[in-house]
Image 1 (cartoon, rainbow, N blue to C red):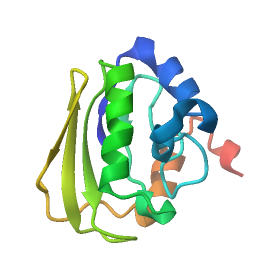
Image 2: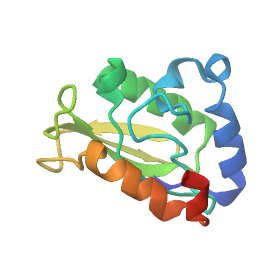
Image 3: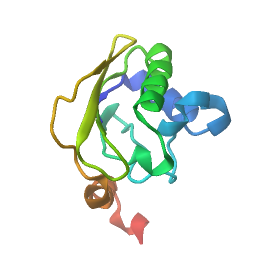
Length: 136
């Protein structure tokens, strides 16, 4: 998932996605430790560049599309591309989603494979820490 959101929406989207009861069907994008690699996926500057295994919790492309629609309407500044895997831990792309100007578009795969979050998530996490001692 790569893209950005307006800086003024960062705190609100983080708050919205930090509460399972508040975010409803957008739950697959919650900002917690529950999904492989997702965690705090909106950076302080509004940039988004993360890989995660949503299938780990049995979310499919329909769930992803529903969640993106909720986020797109709530946050019109959200502009991102998401490449979805085809099955649990698969890196074969099954669909590409685009979110722009409050609209979600589901397309045929635009890439053959997606980044494997099992390999990069800890490296990405560590690279974003200002003080590496926080990890210890």
